[in-house]
Length: 387
Image (cartoon, rainbow, N blue to C red; front, side):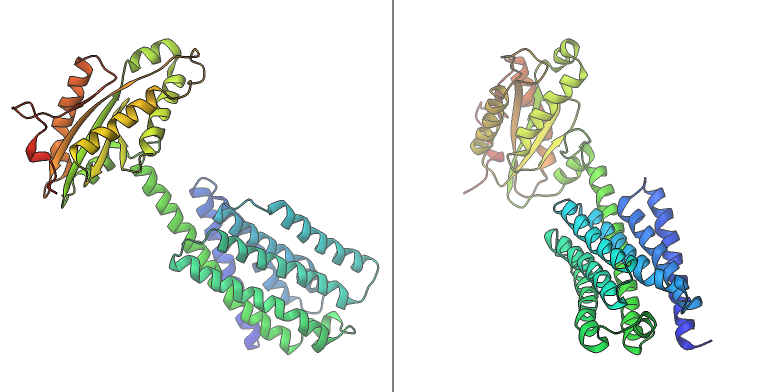
């Protein structure tokens, strides 16, 4: 057994194992789309490698080079598109790719020289890799994984592009399939592509795993309805000691039970989301800490500034647009309690006082902002920031 055959068997075994691993992982992760596409691409690559190894010089090898190669590149492109959640120009790429493959098939059908057939196949493979690189660039997050993947995909694209001038000037229009596929130049480029492909596969799998972990982390920290921090994540954030101090706002949607009873829970959810949207637009860390209860952290902010933020949220929410399925002109309000915390203490130290201020806002008629007061009737001096 030659060294090349042994190498191909090892590559096929690795590709097959990775295909199985990706397929199982895709199912385990509720049919993860990038992993499913990658598993299909690896399956094609495994089959192609086995054909090249054990059926050289047969029609199967021709099919492998002319059909399975572009199919594998297209599937890999689909995996990267799915991983980057990129939909722009997808239809245009598919049409261009299918058009190049259709031209190659038509040339084969009419018995055109192999040179022209393989030229369009190579163009299709180049297009798949160039498009994949552009998709990565469009969603680049400057992680080491993303940058490494981009470099690897670009190198693979360059190897494919390099075939085009070699095909024209090195092989020439008179080249036949056996002369092209068995040439030392093509075998060397295929070997280089194989190692690059293994690197790309490893990076893609690593990126998918990293994205999945990040998704699960966000899901564990975020409220499923509003996207704000959940109570556990908000408490953890508020438990960190602040160097300068600041303020905390507690909020509660007024008469929310009546909204649910009168209009239904779906409308109630829309009201909650509308309020959460106003909170999120402040740019500060906001959390949903109960059914219709919310909180906002304002690090480094004076009490009066915090009161202004609370009043802004109250005004915007109360004057907001109509909620679907509620009578036109119906307005929902919210009440707010504001308390400050001193430097060197965690924001959570102000929670009880903010909650007491919120209770007072409710008791005094709702739809208003109340501040935490000390015994003298003034805003707590100990809670104000020093200039």
